[in-house]
Image 1 (tube, rainbow, N blue to C red):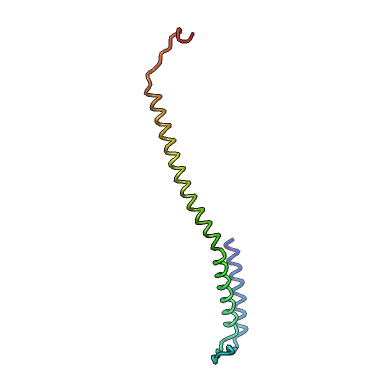
Image 2 (cartoon, rainbow, N blue to C red):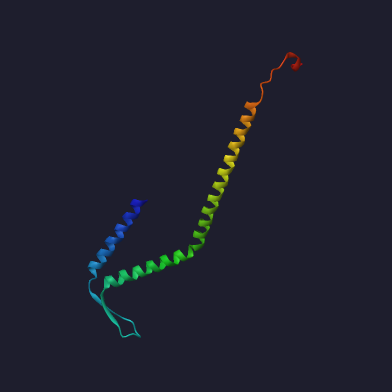
Amino acid sequence: MRILAWAIAAAVAIVVIAFAVANRGPVEISVAPFPYRLDIPIWALAVGALAIGFLSGALVRWLLDHKVRRMARRGRRRTRVLEQELAGARKQLDEAVRGQRATVSAAAPVSLTPKDLA
């Protein structure tokens, strides 16, 4: 899977580099109500627009995934509590089994006679 991700990233990088080399000419950017004008290469405009789109999409996805992350945190906390309870229950069980063995081994030996079996 990691190799596939690197292959896709390399292909995208090659396309972006080819686009940048082919479109080195400047373009003038001006925002209508403001008197500011910018002369930047076309490739910088395209890559900047893609970067802004990617970042805004990532931000929206992060905000929408808040509920899923919260549920995962709650699940991890619940798992930790249940594991602690299980460890305590196992410890109590081990102590009970040890105590029962000690009681059985400390009992006096019983000798049976034929009369007891009848």
